Image (tube, rainbow, N blue to C red; front, top):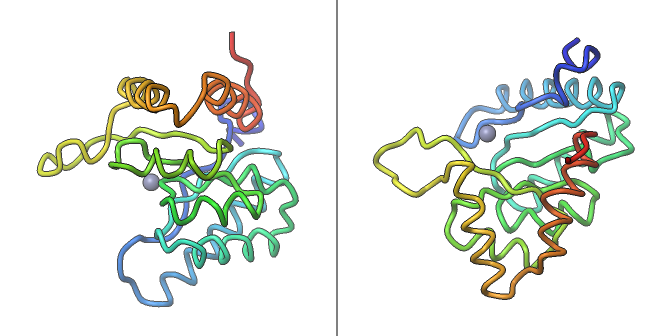
Length: 174
Ligand SMILES: [Zn+2]
């Protein structure tokens, strides 16, 4: 309803717990994910998934659910908090990985694999782990760092942070 009214750009986040749970819980979560994918598909909206970070196995199971839901534009499925090991399988299958830039080394590793990704910040909810996640206003300093290291170009940044976002969310910058 929110997407139809233009008050939301997509559905999220839904997904699976990234800690040990019994199989019934996983099965139930998969049903919710598949339903979210079906609704998002019908609305041409994005769907954000929060999943365990089990590399190719995680991506494969999402591709299966997407196929069951009949999703053709898989780039509208965003794998939030993706690990570097999920990046290549995600891109190979047409999904969009979203990289938490606060995690040491992961942003660097991810951009070496693809520029077709989304970057994300997070809310620091655990005072015992300072720096584990970064707020939105610190993304820029991480991006500047990659530019200094020559791991990305300004064109890459524009592609990732403007063109990619416009396409994903159906918005216009400026
Ligand atoms: Zn999440």
